[in-house]
Image (spheres, rainbow, N blue to C red):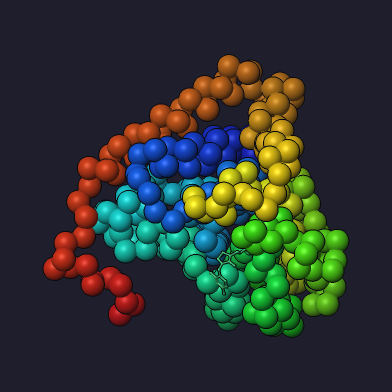
Length: 316
Ligand SMILES: Cc1ncc(C[n+]2csc(CCOP(=O)(O)OP(=O)(O)O)c2C)c(N)n1
Ligand SMILES: [Mg+2]
């Protein structure tokens, strides 16, 4: 098990996540984008529980947040966002479909819930190969209302597959609040119908996320099957850049900004004597510099040429 200090070191990645969104907005121009600012602790806290050889499969809001937490090279990531040839998917995947197969990041899909059955297939392959690797499967709150969520969790439970289902619950599916589309208080209650453990945790508390996911990892790794963890958080920005946030009040957004998971963890580190305030702020600055450098370098890279742009689009 990682020590508290190891998790503390992941604050660097966490801060980098937030900087990456800001930087890419200003440097890379406009495209459809799903910001994950405010949701950093859920991905950092859960991915920090993994061994390097473990796997993740994420979703349309995971292009920066989960990708950086899984250890992506920032320049290669930025190159992919910008559609450049040296990007992780040679610029063909872009922001929403970024994957880093050697790094254990098996990618994302723009189809809401589409990664969940894929995760079940990958977990079945791991089980058949008697591997001790596990897989974290991420999806949004809205995705848990898709039929494939039910089918996938039922199958994974029946076959005791080595997967942990993690709901990045930001309380909205586009403009729809969760309370309007489900009649339960917590998404984790759904676990009961598959006979698996279910837990809702404060997704803005990186240490609470870490603890809950680590226990679920151990269960999956030891052949006891999947768990469902609801990581309750909030997205500060709109669903995408074109969202004018007309379905919620500025007060609601402000309240959640006060629960910033990064600021909160910085305070924990300082209060616990793990780092000084200056050290924490140095990490912040280092993250900003790293992102700026990565974006600047990626902007100089070549784009796919018309001659080769169809290459690498389909699997052989
Ligand atoms: C199958 C499918 N239905 C609808 C959409 C359009 N769509 C894109 S994102 C989204 C909201 C998804 O909400 P949630 O799962 O909570 O993820 P979040 O965007 O909040 O991270 C919708 C409806 C889609 N991409 N795929
Ligand atoms: Mg959502």
